[in-house]
Length: 373
Image 1 (cartoon, helix red, strand yellow):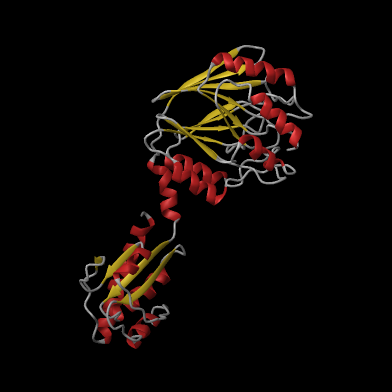
Image 2 (tube, helix red, strand yellow):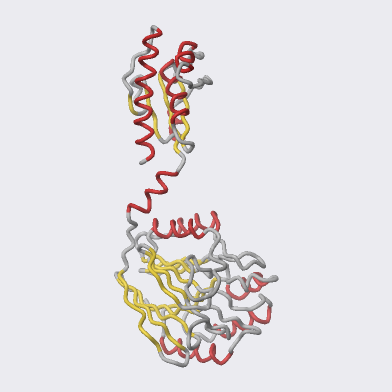
């Protein structure tokens, strides 16, 4: 698949019209399968600017795919963007490629933001059987030689993690008027410079990208409107996420543990209190019974107080439907609900102390195990 990637046309006061007109003729000669436009078609989001941008892009012989930029979100520009270019987030699919376009803009603010809802939408539309490409306006990593860094996505960290974990092959973006490409783990991030604005940074001429995708490789050329082109490189597409990426998320995510016996006896009550005393703050334990649940065991509370652990017991009955709410289940009777800790119900005070120490040892082992889960 051949893609021409253009960005930052800036119809309005910044426009160098002759460059855009010449580039459109060149793109028609290239005959791409698709033209991807990553935002800032206008300067101020006003009707006449977006209308002119639409009329210019309609001269393309190829299909084109447009997402908005921060300048398009000024004033009521998004309304006119939708009039001429359709929805702000969209999808292109063929038998080999999926291009997911998102709206990284906020009304009258230059900062970019994807947000939880769009990230979830991206995840829902990712296809494991195809090459996946994300198109947006704002950059997710800083671009060298563009002055003081501004307007990286507010949620860039979350977006980067999502891209790598899912296995996106490419990201196409614009915004900084500087062409640039970098590989982030297994994802290739490609930025287009400005095709239309007089504000071209660090480059001899207005420019755009020509990208060729095959099953295993992406080839990138930087095309200047008046000064030829250069081969940037040919890169292997390999989208499997390294295990190291997932480790940090596993360590930090909240984990919920259930301790359970037939009647929520002293073993469960002590296990709940010890776990919540010893575990880090991203973990929480609950104790419960599956039949008639016991009252607070006073001896259990007293032997825990001896080691500075407060026990607060709330009677709770649980059934198998509740198990989905827990990351780990420990049972003290063989109930078939989770891992079994073979510890007898204590009878004498010395039994309680022995059981306390055995549970404390096993709780510490469980915490170490859960941290790595």
